[in-house]
Length: 334
Ligand code: ACO
Image 1 (spheres, rainbow, N blue to C red):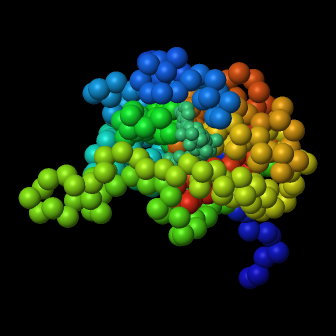
Image 2 (cartoon, rainbow, N blue to C red):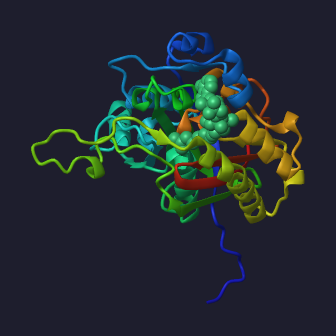
């Protein structure tokens, strides 16, 4: 028998947010003592005043677990209720298993399936895209989405062009099935496949470990052509916002808050300007944390929710861009 009832596609919503950042602060004044730079140069070119840095012995999963516990408590969700744990990171605890597995283990989230996503600064939005799709397909009801990064251990602190930019931290959101017009209104992701040489880190990857005697031959530190990144960032971020808004049936005029990946204040301002979004609607915390890659958006969501900026019912547009290049957008109504 046929039915005229429309098929209900479940919507995902963010039910709780959490963050964990290291206690140790590295200020621009501290950096002046390490490399030939000034607070004035860093502030003017990037908007960064200080960043948080991890200590020896810290692991990415330690910060993920703290952020996750806070997000779960806020959502009122028990770890055993989680169907999935997805972590966007390019700085895992180990080559394997996935860092998300350590999070699952620590939380005792025994009913979840856990995995990592490698998408540089877009890692959180790639993970949110998957979470939204899994919930929309009816394959899961509750999950944890994280973005976490330890960038300072792979940063060359003799290279003033990169060492002033990055910081460490983690953010988490709990995603649950939602009713009504609130929740994740859209997600969008993309990758270019034409700029892998512009921003990369060989690290322990196979491109650097062909030596069969087991000697590390890779470059230890992150490599970046900053000007080249800058050149493409604004165009790709604008496209990401427009695509995500279009999927949600909205335009830039509907946006209450733009929450961009915190890469550089000038990139954020130029992106907002091209979208016609006024600067007071751009959420900025780069002055406190620097560029924390995939952690920057969930950290911003946590701060924005808890300081009262990102209010229920408002349209929040998140956008990211990173090495690869990768990019993504998400439109959220809390
Ligand atoms: N302090 C003082 N001077 C510096 C510093 C510093 N820390 N770094 C560079 N300079 C100098 C340069 O040597 C250069 O000097 P010169 O003119 O004598 O040669 C001058 O400042 C200008 O350098 P530029 O590289 O042209 O400076 P620019 O204004 O482009 O800013 C920056 C550099 C901040 C890196 C910028 O290009 C940028 O933000 N790029 C994007 C980076 C980014 O967003 N990355 C995100 C991706 S991260 C990820 O995916 C993991």
